[in-house]
Structure formats: structure tokens, C-alpha cells
Image (cartoon, rainbow, N blue to C red):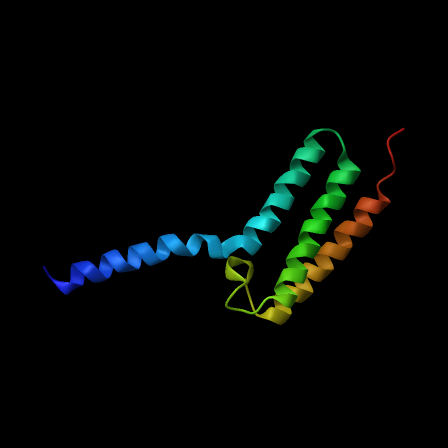
Length: 103
């Protein structure tokens, strides 16, 4: 047996165990999917607010979690991510509140 084969098996097992470390992204995506389901059920305003809350949750997670725990939620530098997520979350909240209620 060569040690090269054992090293590749070890790397594969390590990758399989890392999937749970993406819980911040999974949590945000769960919120986005929930928002889409709510919008599909003809509750546009509430679904839009849930979407805005999901983006603001991503902002809070990116702000509070250290870089080695944030996983795939980190796209660019921390500052750029926070500015983009903050502006998008606030803008979505304003626009969702601006939509007139159904008649």
C-alpha cells in the first residue's frame, strides 16, 4: 500500500465532515426559500419582509462570526460584505414596507 492512496482517502473524509460547517449559509438560504414560498402563496409584502430579514440575518452573521466560522457566506472582504448586505437588507425592508396593502 502506498501512502499516497491513504492521503487521498483522508482528504475525502475530511471534506465530507465539513458540510455542517456551512450552517450560516444554510440558515440564510432557508429564510430565502421560506420567503419565496410565502410570496408564491400570494403574500407578497410578508414574503418580501421575510426576504429582507434573511439578508439582514446574513449581515448579522457576517458581522458577529469569525472568518473561519462563516464558511461560504464570506464572498469578499468583511467590509464589502457588510456594506452590500446592509444596504440590500435596508433597501428591501423599505421597498417591502412601501408596497401598498392588497385592496
